[in-house]
Length: 99
Image 1: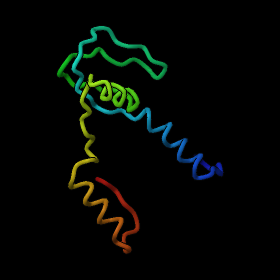
Image 2: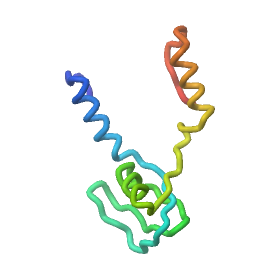
Image 3: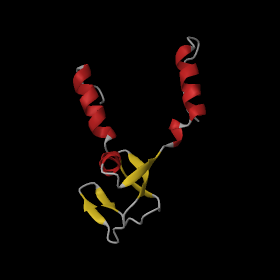
């Protein structure tokens, strides 16, 4: 957000909006042989059972309609989350890097 002074609710809304384009891997349960043209770019084609990378908003929409399963990203691994939790609880830590 640069040097822009945003209220916390506006900052949350902006970050939520930006997160919607975060790429996620899905496993579709449908076939769509031709790619889809979106404003943000081209996605697809989709083959049932084969991984595909789509924006978060599309992944959640397909999951809600039971058309795809979302593959958890690497940062959602239990060991990585334990490391983040350890960092957040340790007052001596200065910076965090998930690598």
